[in-house]
Image 1: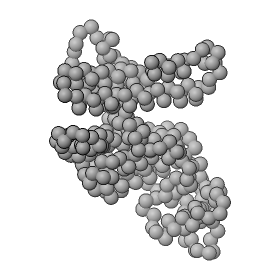
Image 2: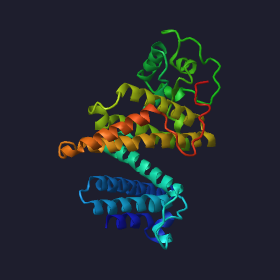
Image 3: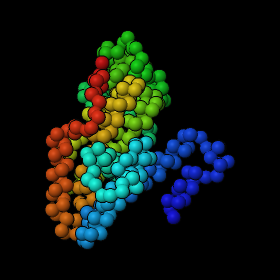
Image 4: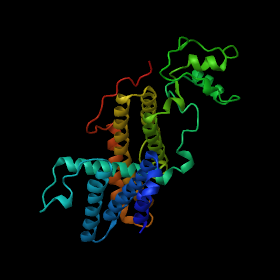
Amino acid sequence: MGFRVSFWHISGSRTQGERMSEWDVDARVEELTRGLRRMAARLLQSAAEHPDAVRARELSAAARVLTSDVLARLDGEAVEDSPAHRSEPEVQDTVPLAKSAASEYRAALDELVELYLPDYTRRLDDDPVMTDPDLSYERWNHLHRVRYGRGNTFEDAPLWNDAVSSRGKAVVRGMTSKVEVLRRLHHSYVTRQDLDSPEGELVVQVLQGCKATQRSRAIGDGDFVDELDLKRKLDTLQWRAVVIAAGRGEQARAQLLTQLRQLEVLAAVVLELDTAFRQRSSSPSLGARIAAAAHGVKAVLRHWPPKVEGAVAESGHTTP
């Protein structure tokens, strides 16, 4: 019944549909898609935990149909291997399997965000959105003072693509104005204005996914991975992502999609570990599953960033 209501709200009456903007429709479809991805992830989780092997296979098959058929259609992919298009059982080739895995990875990232990020933390509220993690303490401290000074000085900050002649010059405390500090430290930070674009919408997903991954209980309480190493890897990923998004353009969008897929691969193994870790007290037999999932997380981090199909080379992400 819940899904009928959701579809009704999306379709609505003809008059209501005419009044709805394209953005409203896209937002509602995205909300529905996220719910379906969460359902697929929970079906897979239930399949892994179900004591009846026959029922477990049924749940797993339902999840595969949802990810490779329904979600693939919502993502705009052509679905030729749907059960509705097959007259007899056949072995799937590698392409449908890849699509199914990609949908499961997206579902895992969405699930982590739902679990660990409250709604109010999912916005870009701060300026700067991020500073270069390799910035020296002295130069970071100059930005810190500007950030917490009076007024919103970052409204006067140059955009990432602006040409700034004084960039790189030394900042002298008490002698350099706040506006000039931002100009001299240009390309050491990214602002909300830099991310006011379609590319910025993608980078929000990257930032949310990184936060949710680090806040998961298995990572924070489980002592399975080196948290400092994980933080360094994700800080590097986030900085590259915000810089690429600030540069904007079609190539930037392709690079961001690659980074998002890399993060989704990590999210899938972290969610598997996190789910088993949270249920360990009620099911002591989960020890083997926890150990296997922890090994999977370590393997992904050891070969970071993971290779993903159709990856785009990240050119132009270093600070000019």
